[in-house]
Image 1: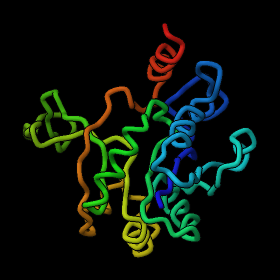
Image 2: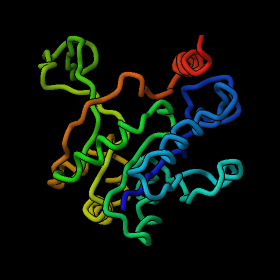
Image 3: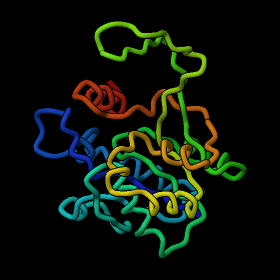
Image 4: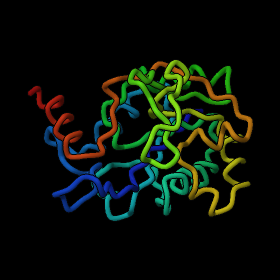
Length: 219
């Protein structure tokens, strides 16, 4: 069984001019979150869906399963995993609601890869020259971009292994996690790379929202 875990608990503070988080702002006549939810619903490889979301925003989403958001992204994932534990899924597919243009192929791709690995995440190659700076003022070194990749969601994990890792971490350690696969790799899980999707961008700023609106409205 494959469970979809949609993260929609963030406040989206870098999006300005709206009285609601970015995932609930309308684009093309419906909330941003509805696009990825529809894709997950229509994906034959997904058996159930849990949305991590504040209770005040659940009313218009339909008959999904819900879990409460946490104080950080990784805390929200942990809350979702704990809720899904009662359904004993084999794999969990974690996705950000702020990436509305995910496709069924993106979802099925990470699930397929996870059948022979402990998990999988879609990535895009880094094409720009990339520098490291220790103090943020001058270049410390140039990184080899052939070995660098930009991560996206959906990410798929072996459910039992991924949950077990969260159960071992302290509250402070969960707060310090910067990416979903960071703790998986650090605890020995083998995470495969799958081909990312350029259109599957994350809405973070007002410019991102306008880009998305232009796509769905055919502008």
